[in-house]
Amino acid sequence: MKKILMIEDDLELAEILTEYLEQFGFKIVTEDDPFKAVSILKLEPFDLVILDLTLPGMDGLEVCESIRERQDIPIIISSARSDVTDKITALELGADDYLPKPYDPRELEARIHSILRRYEMKVRQKQELKSDYKCDKNARQISYKGRALDLTNAEYGILAHMISKQGSVVSREDLIHNVQAINEDSSNKSIDVMVGRIRNKLGDKSLIESIRGVGYKLLK
Image (cartoon, rainbow, N blue to C red):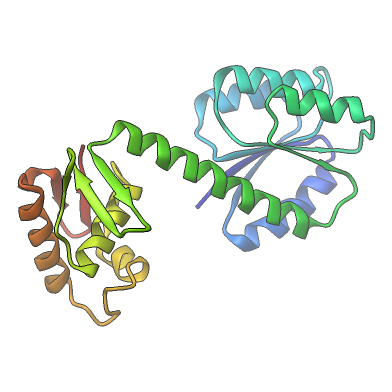
């Protein structure tokens, strides 16, 4: 579930947007005090920020600058201020998008999904640069420490998905739903067998950790 911080002093609008966005599986935390919002971001992990510009005690542009100085997190400006200078300044300060009020909540939801996809791709690319694993999706080929692996379609799908989630636990159910080459009727045992073959092909069985009762975790 993606967690979003909405910094908005129009609590009625915040409630409407929260109710709408929660339909799509987002968890929304609303804060009308910009100082508290900046503090919350230092203490809790969020996936995206929706930021109003007209806030009590601190201008939204200052908030945007403060957030960007500390974190690489998507920021969508949601503002009734129509001055093009505000829009240009916000984008120069690091905002990812600027949505002038009033707008349809459906447009906000679409922009959130678009920005999160771009950020997730950027994170994956950074991870691959630092990782020993290289995944060529066009060629459906995975290399480990420069050595191309001879994988079946199912093995490729499993390892590619683990690489995209590297460091996180991947459940067997997650693999069944996200790897096209795995039949939905596949048993846990058959998935365990495929993971075992991948371990052997990597040449180091410790690279894929088994999490009892849950699934697996791909290590560096």
